[in-house]
Length: 253
Ligand code: SAH
Image (cartoon, rainbow, N blue to C red; front, side, top):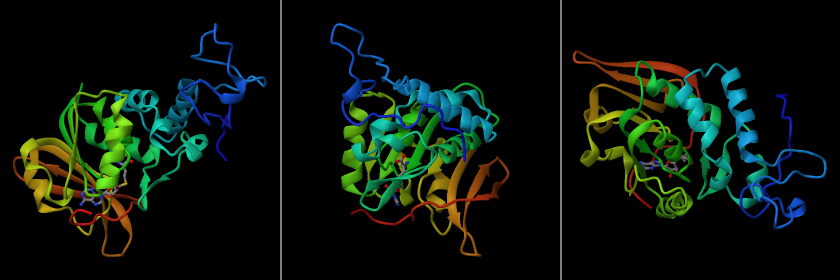
């Protein structure tokens, strides 16, 4: 078991740091209100511990760790699951889909950033889901185009992201297997759903020097992360570790 100091965190209801049973008197700062047991309810501290665990798994890119330490994952999950928001696990977000595991989000974004400095340019995300990863990407890229094929989740992401006012995130409803030509060429493309192969449209819309990271089903039937690197001379694919993502599907619903 990993150490989880300070858990369970209670964000049952209400805004950040205002645990219903531990609410500080109104006159006091409502930003952080300690519980009688002294457990931290400051979500920043809980995220910092999540980031420590992710760093312990080998993620070293400071841009990635900063982004994961900043984006409030608990705002993207159902209120009944808020207590698990900072555990390293995928969680249901409705319509049979899941929010990705934080360590996998970190790993994939670190792979996209490898060899670059500062912010990435335009990034295309396939599978907005609840919008969490799009928010993380908004901190490491100049522009984020995120496509979702399920209208219900596209709208949920819009709702979830509203309070963050991320001017560089563009949510699109459509079939991401076709990419999004209007935003191309992309410095990076990241898929949050696993297909049978990396669609040709994504490779076409990738800038030279850019990278795609996509869960892909291998001949063995297992799903693994596939890294695509586009150089002036070739398109190189590298198969990395096994993963478990929801399927990439064509069309909209
Ligand atoms: N990045 C998301 C993870 C969502 S799960 C998050 O942070 O929550 C993957 C999502 O990919 C699902 O919402 C699913 O509907 C979507 N998806 C699957 N195939 C797709 C396609 N062809 N185009 C766009 N979205 C797709």
